[in-house]
Image (cartoon, rainbow, N blue to C red; front, side, top):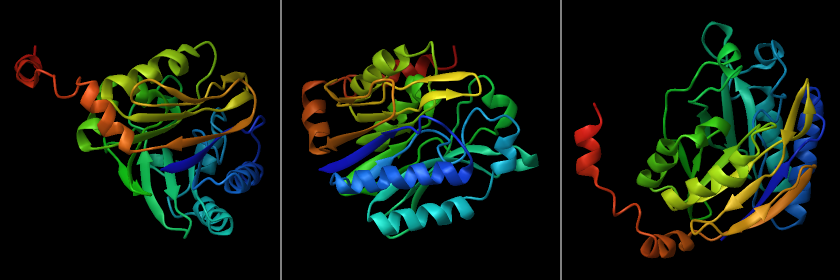
Length: 265
């Protein structure tokens, strides 16, 4: 069993230092609530809709932001999942998420593969499809925002053995239906837990819609945020994946022979 705190915030995005302060406060709240991990939204360390500041705030995976998060994880005694712009080719960074455990060790670093809208102007797409890590006896996977809107991505994780898919996001209005309809569909059709952790409030003209959630493989809604800053505490039981897959047999019922035959048509 994993107890996770999903930080839907901050309500107001600021400087890197201010955002790290918000992440630290969320980690302390999560630790006090008995969580083993806190998950924060897409680009939580720097801000998301910040234009050319994305490149200005970009840094290597082991840069100052990472070292600050290391200290947060060590001091609070829980793992921290955070988003940041990772230095990329020709000054065009990756939209990345990194997982740091309670000892300060990086467990995984994932670069967003499917870029949406203005993402393409400011980011380089990642090229590694399935990124996983082990945590508290659970096989975890990472996607970012728009990635989850492609069923192939969740299905690839299911095929690779992912039990819990963690998806930091920056979903804005008027696309709240992604959180309320598409995310539950991904959890069910690929038979895994999905935690979708969104921002809230306004940022340079964008209104983030909140609605963060964790959905079980049988579509049970384990947590659901509103539209304001919040910390949602959720319990993930990885044994429920095998139980659900025994009842809901979509994965084993696939006609792979037909899919392979028709994939070039």
